[in-house]
Image (tube, rainbow, N blue to C red; front, side, top):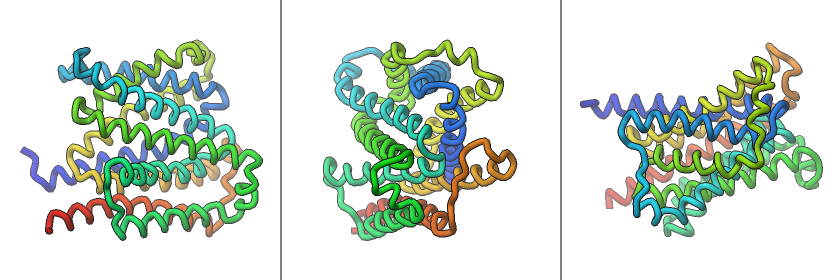
Length: 313
C-alpha cells in the first residue's frame, strides 16, 4: 500500500506532467492551425482520445453503462459537452490571431471564473488568500499586455480578436467544470470524458474534414498525433493526480503551465526562428506572466487554507 509520502510524490509528478502537456499544447496547435481548420483539429483530438480512452477503460472494466443513471445525467452532460467542445474550438481559433504565450496566459482566467461560479452556485466563500491571488492575477494580466494595452482596449485587430476568443474559451471551460462537478457523484472523470469525446466527435462530424489529415506533411502528422496524445495524457494524469493528492495542490502545480509555454517559445525562437511570430515580450511582460501564474496558484492554495481553517474550527 503506498505511503502518504509516495502518494504525494505521485500526485506532484502527475500534476507537473499535466502542466507541461498543457503548456506545450498551444505551440503545437499554433503550428497545426496553419494546415487544418479548428473543427478538423478538434474532431481528431476527440476521435483519437475517445479511441485511446475507450481501450484504457475497457482494460479496467470501467466503461460507462447505458442505464437510468446515465439518462438522469443527460442535462449536465449536455452542458459539459457544450462547454468542453466550445473551449476546444475557441482556443484553437484564437491561435490563428495571437501567439501561444498570450493564449496560455489569458486562459488562466478559466479557473478564476470557475472560482467565481463556485461562489455563486455552490455558496462557497472567497478567502482573503484567494482574493489576494485574484488581485495578483489581474495585475499580472495588465503587466503582461503593458506594451499592447492600447491595441487590446481598442477592441480591434488580431490581438483583440485572439484575446476575446480565449476569454470565451475560459467561460466555456468554467461551464464544463461546473457540469463535471455535478456529474462526479455518478461517474468517474475518465467515464465522463469518454462520453463527451464520443458525443463531441459525432456533433462535429458535419463541420470537420477528417480526410484533410491524410494530406498533412510529416511534421503536420506528428503534430496532430501529439495533440491527440496530449489530450489523453493531460486529462488522465490530471484525474490521477487529483486522486493521489489534494485538489488545491494539484491546481497550484498545474497553474505553472504558462511557464512551459514561455520557455518553449523562447527556445523555438532561438533554434528555429521564424517558425511562429515572435512574442515581443519585454521584462514587464515576463514579470506579468509570472504574477499570473503566482496569482492562480495562490487562489488554488487559498482553497486548501480555507478548508483547513474550517476543519480546525
